[in-house]
Image (cartoon, rainbow, N blue to C red; front, side, top):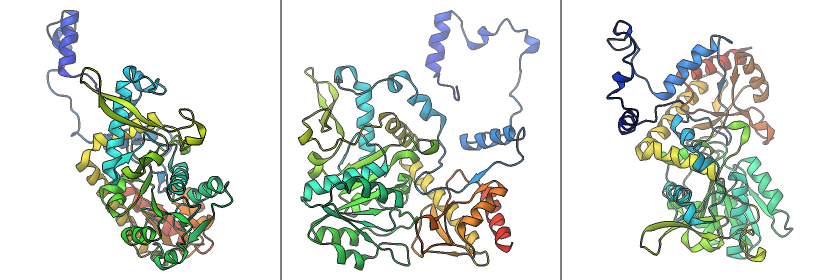
Length: 451
């Protein structure tokens, strides 16, 4: 067990049960000469992340002289997860239940889902959130389907600075309908949406526009002009949020005109885990609740007037007639959503803001140090959160291969998806990256560039 779960009241109750007067009385059989009379000679207290780094450093002395440093991002983010999150998530009450079909037996599970929904609404500035979807990519598919039902239009447009894999998943599934054509909107030299190009493709047949915030390049922009243009064309604005921690520092998309927000909850208490399982956060406006996929937990009163929780809306094909279902794709990632809930509650509002700022400050430091190197520059001019793109004087893929000799995962080469960015490297920094790691990364990049 990674932390002590017992409160003073718990300890007193156990002592009374076994008939011991105090903790000291439990150990009276130990000779007085062998008992510790003063405090242990321990170093000053440190935070849980600092303690884990210290313990990992001791463990790695048995194997390798230096641990791997990772600056990977691109939709999967390494944030510190406090021990309490999965200690609570792993309790049998949460780990073993399936679906809360019987509310009288599932009040704890339903309340946890309700708290999750409430937190996500507040986080993204919208009215309603469902009980989660599979992940961000399939959640965007659900959002496009939802927009098509609401507008009774089939086409949609998507920004080129949306994650290429999100675009691919959406194109594959939504494209099963031949009429659902997708239009790709280019980005500007700042790495943001080309508003003029967007206005040119917003035809009367367009149901929705998909924007990422922050973008796949890490850039941040004001969504209001985009929302105004989309709404003027009678379409809906769908916003993909790859890392919700950014909401601690930047404005919520719902307050800037987003109609549907789909986010990836992995960063909120779920480990990277080789790509899954993750949790898709899905939020929208009250006016569209009847077209929202998945299920919705609500609060009501029972026959005795007590507050109780129920499944208010369940529009999956398992629950209602197939032709009336809003989705046959989504499911509820309840356990991962619970981890997200506990993690978010553990942070609290101020903790959320502080964590977001730490991420931004560390990423800014890394960007400034990297762009001081000869031949290295920031690819885009727009502000960023904890990811940015730098242009190197050499192919990014070859530099990444060389950095692995230094036990560094240096980021993602964008040439994999963007032919016009052969030397571009997407670098991600989170609170898990120490200053020493960042400095080692910068020094290794400089050494390999010089050859």
